[in-house]
Image (tube, rainbow, N blue to C red; front, side, top):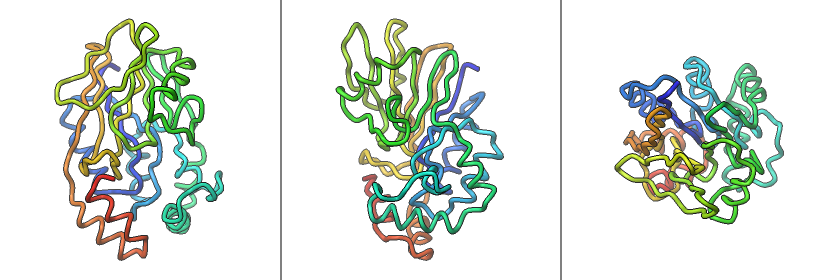
Length: 243
């Protein structure tokens, strides 16, 4: 498997997920990986889980996934997130809850590791700065790790003891053989890096390249559905800002 799609943080946003999957179908990929948080915040938890299952995506468990299947308490979530998780728990089937509950926290293959938060804290830790990235590189025994949770596309690179921030770029990121990489594809359903478009990545393992991608979708329709379902207004408003 040399060319893979990587997604994360779908958060029950069906139009964003459909836009990304449709785009990936045109990218000549061989498989798709998901770094967790299929549900939470958005108004389509069941349809998103079913699409992930039907497409046979390889997925790890996110903190919202764990909370929705009642494996995590709600205490450390924001008030809006707590309301959304309670709503999600009431609107997701037992079959899909069982699927979320069985997702692994970490998945490892020959070329990469994938996790939702970090290698050190799979469900909760955010990798947002060089210090946390450095701590996680010390646990990484593969060239690549894919992660999500922060909803910020990009990542970090470690080369000869130096850890640097990776920002999204239009041209492909060339992977240096001597380096290790933490790659965040960004959030499909609720970006927080200032770009409201759905985010994902395409990774070419053979040619050692990473393509950071964005695609537009109907945000206003999602905002309208959020209000119709009685979910907090701010969960829709932030979609327009990418924050």
